[in-house]
Structure formats: C-alpha cells, structure tokens
Length: 372
Image (cartoon, rainbow, N blue to C red):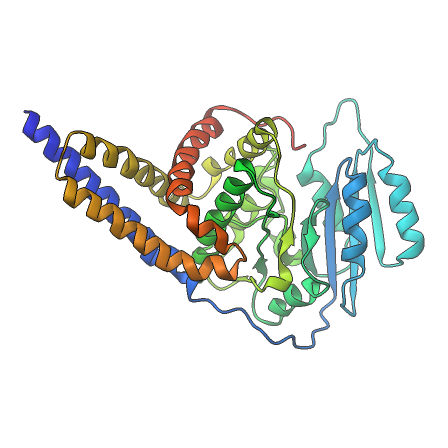
C-alpha cells in the first residue's frame, strides 16, 4: 500500500510538471517573441482619456498635468470626481482654467445610493465626446508624453480593445518586490492570451476600447452587482480573437506605486481576486489549473524529497522547469523593464503560487464591499 502511495505521489508530481511546462511553452512564451512597433507614425484619431478619482488630490496634482500635456493633436481628458471630500474639486477647477481640453464630471454622495467605480466610469464614458476611449487611474504616471499616441496607433487596425501594461515603481523591500513580480506574471499571462487569440482580462490602469463596444454590450450591466471588475470582467466578456490587441512599448507604460504595508496590500489583492469567479468557464478552468498545478508542484516536490521518492528525477524535473522559466522570462522581463526580478525567480515563483491559492479562496468566500 505504501509503495502504491509513493508511486501515486510521484505520478501526480509529474502531471503537475507537465502542466506547468505546457503553460510556459504554449502560453507564456508568446509574449517573449512579441516585438512592439518601434516607429512612431502620425495618427490623429480623436481620443477621450477617462479617469475616475475619489479623494485623489495629491495624485491628480502630480499626474494630471502629465496626461493633459501629452503630445497628441486631438484628445480630451475626462475626470470623474467621484464623491471626493479632499478639495479635488478646487484643484480640477484650477486645471480647467489652464487646460481647455479637460472636462470634469462631479458625483456627489447620496445617503441612500452608494456609487462605485463602474458607475463613475459609465458617467465618464457618456460625457466623452469621442468614440475611442483610453482609461487610467489618478495614481498612474505615464512613462512618456507619447502614451496617448502609441495607444491610439492600435485603433488604426480593426482593434476595439487595446490592452496596455502598468508596472509598479521599483522601491525595494519584500512587498514591492513581490508586487512587481506578481504584476508581471499576471501581465505575461493575459498579454500572451491575446497573442493566442483568447484574451481574458485587462487592467484599468492602462486600457482602451471603443464607446460603441461599451454601449452595444450594455456596459457593465452584466456585473454591476459586484464592485470590482470594471476592467477585467469587461474585457473577459467582450474580447474576441479579432477585436483585441496589446501595446507594450515602454513609452506606454503607466507607472504606479505599490502598497507599502501588508494591510494595504491585503485589501488591494482581496478586491482584485474577488472577480475571477465571474470569468468565462474556460478561463476559470485555465487559470485555476495553472494556480493549482503550480502550488501542488512545489508541495509534491518537497514531499518527494523528504520521503526520498526518486530524488534525482524529481530534482531534474524541477531544474528543467526552472531553466525553461529563465529562458522564457529572460527576454520578457527585459522588455518589461524588470530584469532584476529574474535573480529572485525561484523564491518569488514559489510565493506566487501560494499567494494565488490563498487569495483565490479568500476571493471565493469574501465579498468586496468598497472600491477604495
């Protein structure tokens, strides 16, 4: 009986190894071979940049001028001041006197009607005068003044959805290092999925789509009952192989600061994980097995080594997976300006799969009640 159990553990470890190798080679490698457009062609598609901001005075003061002063011939910026009580209204009024292409939509708190980001974005989309919409958050800083231009270029194709990349600043420390790694792993997954013709999510810090797509699919109506998901759920329900494209030129990166405390990081990740259960079934299965097989791979690795179950074979498979990761992620991390994370890959990857399973359970059973 004991022999059968040991054989079963070894077999299951090999299944997890094969699954992980499959994800690496067939999914994540797609992004490694992708080359963004280097040239900066002339483009003049009218763009509406939309930002929803609640009590973001300091972030608006720093970031909004960088967005308003983008080198683009025809764009407006729509800021939805969502129930702010921090004098954001006075700051936005001051900006309006300087920047004529800034439009402000103000939402006031109602005692019996609680608003969320989806409601704010819907009002911003309705107020936008242009068909092509570009979204970011108040705490995001564009890498260059060509952000709008390079995102807009993608609308010269048949694309109705453009998925960008939004990294965190490198500041050091465990929380920042892991947050950067988790963000990149997530980006590798969802950006590679687009290249495979099966887009399943995007991030609202750097996302574009058309107004026609939004209203023809009834906006956020299908998931308005949950507070998060204005970005990934919208993309999950409306992206197709023919209407979605990615943009990862460094000019388009939208940088933001990671949380500095465990409590802040926990609240952020709990909110993000809560919407995965609403993805399409095929995407839930794909993401769930990636998370589960990666977690079990490490658990079974330890068990096999502790009980001396074919240790040479087990270590060989672990090293083969690690070398494959390094070969695939090396170029991707370089392109995404995070080459330093490759050195910490073995420990960060282990923590990542523990994190996915823990927060996957938390997101399943705990409901998010606020977006900020």
